[in-house]
Length: 398
Image 1 (cartoon, rainbow, N blue to C red):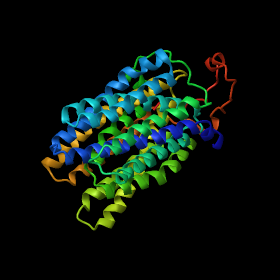
Image 2: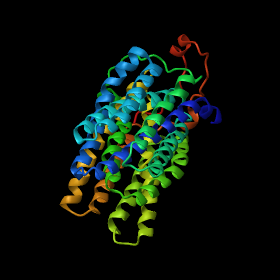
Image 3: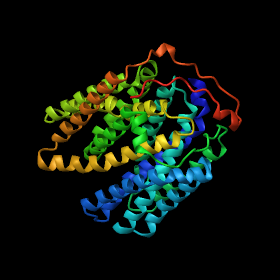
Image 4: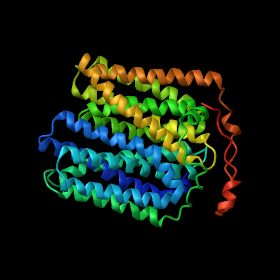
């Protein structure tokens, strides 16, 4: 396990710096927009513009990666994202900011795709759950730290925008200097969602479900409850990822979805309780809900062919992005039509559907015996040997 993490240490370091910058920027724009007198609807539109760019990036960045390679694509996209952060200072208006958020979303879709596909290619079926759990912990921790950086300078000034740009730019260094082998060249730049579903139904549906539910939660929660959820996710992410390496990952997805749905139902049922009780339920919610996407991603990558890591990562991110756009909208409509606590009944319903779907897939494709997994055999670093590299025997299709 230590060898697996050390092999991607540079990528994890780059991810930490990058996501800290993105976390700071997302919070900063909301606060600064409020200070500038932007209506709440306009501030929400900025988030929608980001996800619109993110979705488009998932569609077109694989072509860029196929044309110039992972490292050059990462450098180009990080440079664009860094410049966009600085451009917010020059054009303090809702329309230019919406355009810049679209560009940032496009760039971060590609940056995330490069990192996740690279990390997935360095993992094996026997340790992918643990490796991706460490990556998710880095992600959550970096975003939390990024949000905390808001306190080091006034949001009404230019300093925090400069800091965002610096963080995104510094993230280039570990990627440019990494000794980790570059991922195998892409066989195709086509993003085929139908093929992704055929390869891993639970992975595809789980990614969409996570977007539908998690975006609604994030858009509605206040800082204290969000922090409790992130702490819960950080503490449970690795144990759940480790468990998914030992058993059929779909069983972990079912269990986590059911427990998360239960925690969400508790939040809906006891919304009038003390703040401490709600913080406890938020902790449980984050502990079981937030890790689901990572486990679904690990499951989908278990079945992806060599050279398909970018397509798999891009497809999952696309489904998550589309789900996020729809989920944020549906969550707002549910709260407006009923009661703010109804949001958690909606989230609970989404994860109950995912649990039922996963159980049905387990019934269709019986789980393999974990003990019969093929041991991963490391090969030489020649690009030719990658083509013939033996992968661990995949688990049954989801």
